[in-house]
Amino acid sequence: MNLAQRLVKTGVLEQEQLAPALFRQKRSRGYLAQHLLDLDLVEPEVLAQFVYDHPPIPETFEDLGLPKSLLIQLLLKHSFFRDAISSQELAHEIKISRRLVDKLLAYLQGQGYMQVKARDALSQLSHLSINLSYSLTDAGKIFAEQCLESNRYVGPAPVPLEDYWDWVEAQAIHQIKVEKARLTEVFADYVVPDDLITKLGPAINSARSIFLFGPSGNGKTMIANCLGHAYQDAVYVPYALFVYGQIIRLYDELNHQPIPPTPETQDHDRRWVLCQRPIVIAGGEMTEDALELRFNPHLKYYEAPHQMRANNGVFIIDDFGRQKITPRELLNRWIYPLETRQDFCCLHTGQQFAVPFDQLIIFSTNLNPYSLADEAFLRRIRHKIFIGYVSPDHYLEIFRRVCAGHQIDFDEAAVRDIMARYYVTSSRPFCASHPRDLIENLIDRARFLDQPPQLTSQELDFVCQTYFIKPLGVTDYDAVGDQAKAMV
Image (cartoon, rainbow, N blue to C red; front, side, top):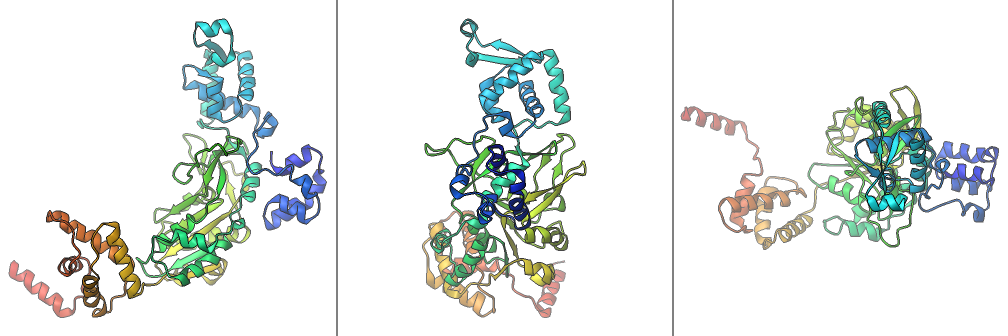
């Protein structure tokens, strides 16, 4: 149960007394506990008894907040794919207590859908339930097949939408302060000017939205990833949600990184996974459908959209403007969520519901911002930070670090030589990605020649010739044409 339900169930507050706090929360978002304190509806000492730092273990079916019929269907579907399964195994798979599983098994036995199967002769004599396994009867298999026709979700029990709202608000990313020392630490392996960190600090602590723009190859994607890893605390993410009789799968191994349990880890509702704050990255492959609930007509359950999987974390839209969804469609879709911190999803049945929209969104692009968005949308993105070309000194330092990473002796004179010949004389700006690319090309050349890579003026000159494109004038193109004709 969420906080409001717990307060009403124990008689601390009546539903009518809760109404002002719920209305205020709906209007301005935030954790209900804070609104209750601001309105002096509950004493802090009393409220502290109902506010947890982890999802409490459900003791009853009422605590789960799910209909018994859903749990019975899950139990049957898990059993359908096994010749025999114990109550302990079912409790592990469905992520609810074994005591509740035993009650469900007893009901299914009474209905003739499941039968007890002793593991061995000793267990038959002892009648210890811990040694018993269960299998479906013929009637149970038929019922399980009907359940699978309804939907083919076979996983942990879902979490009610109300509980999900409660925990997303309690773990809101805007409550976390990232110190300057931590931000400096995450950028320690990169060459980042102090003035840029000074700009990024307020942006990440606002937990609103950031627009990184500037020429290609100067670290915008790297900066966005480092900002995502700046958060050190953990959050609880549910395996799935239960909304209007439908199941939405939310947790996935790609975007959610579980934290291994330690002796200090508190026991909690196992329908939730303790994870690092998620970092979801969407690039040019992102479509309009990726921002909506995706219903699988074969499996008959939903996959959560990108922004829901990013809740309580960071959502990076890389190469903004190059997605399959147009910038205008994306921006129009998100104007309201960016303002109100809530989004709306629609089921294939037509039912619509609100979900939290709590994430630090980072747009990264090398395109002109005004060619992508109008003033109304840019106003809603609080922090616009230009990431430009690097200085000659920073270029040298990047080159030095790349060489160290590949265990190649750094020769400053050789690098300064190509800086003068390929940058200064050609008015070419110093790009942060060039040192990495040039060293990798140098390694490729050394591998082909079967020799150790060496940073010399001659080797650098060779890789520069095959890396940079020299602008060709009209006469140059004519010369190329004449050469081709002569070859023919």
